[in-house]
Length: 348
Ligand code: AMP
Ligand code: MG
Image 1 (cartoon, helix red, strand yellow):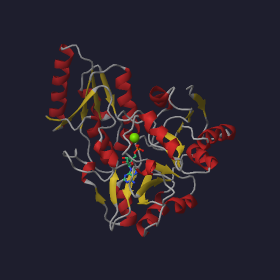
Image 2 (tube, rainbow, N blue to C red):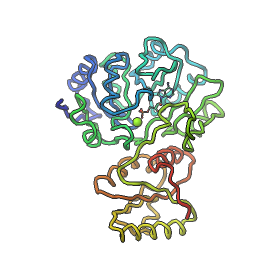
Image 3 (cartoon, rainbow, N blue to C red):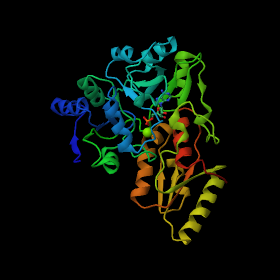
């Protein structure tokens, strides 16, 4: 398959291109497009065979359900049974935007979207290109991250091209993604809302509108064997570059000393090394690549996946990262980093 690659200006949207992309979706094809979180790999979310192609292109396990993306709020009632009170509050405050809600699904939603669950995850993205495509397709669009399953999510069109060239019909390049991490997922089917995956909309921001929220234990730690996750995607290793990633925890000066010592050993063994740290700490490290993730966790979220893919492009073998505070946007950053590292933690 030849993958069409087209650039689009989100401030001056070329509607011919949008129509072309929507036409491919309506015919059951796959189109990758930018959203404010990461690039999505879109298919007609009510067409089971189109959704099956997403699983094939990504190499995604079939029990890991997809998020349906809508282009306007009125589409929601077509796919969910009911909209609980807390969902209304979250929608009023944060939609369109980077938060996904899990509802009880209507039967029109195919099992291949919901992974056989009786619930469906729905998001209304704010990115104008994403919304234009969904509205032109006139159907909810299933759109998981447009990467090979298990690899870091794509925050630039070149990442999508790297993973999906020849496997999908079209890639729309709308520049780099604003948030850079996947949406926050909140299950609103129970008595109390539960965060299944942290993202750019933080626990603190959500609690301001709905009060106390629970966090699924799988957000912080690896599941033990046989433990069943609430968000099926949680059980898989994720976001991993080819390089082996380690988290190093402790006092700032101890961490720097430990990482420099590990890097020295690796270099003696002929390995290429990388370090990820706060910008302000970059001067403390010696390695082949020392990369500042940003000044704060919002910047780190935007840069994280891009940095992980950069290490691979530069053939880095081992990456050591500082551990960041798990509050605000740091919760999502640390959740992705721990998974990228396969939960390998070194105490300094
Ligand atoms: P992504 O492939 O990056 O878009 O991730 C989608 C995430 O949403 C995965 O972790 C899924 O497990 C989760 N998800 C999708 N649908 C549901 C659902 N009905 N209930 C719980 N989690 C879901
Ligand atoms: Mg993904």
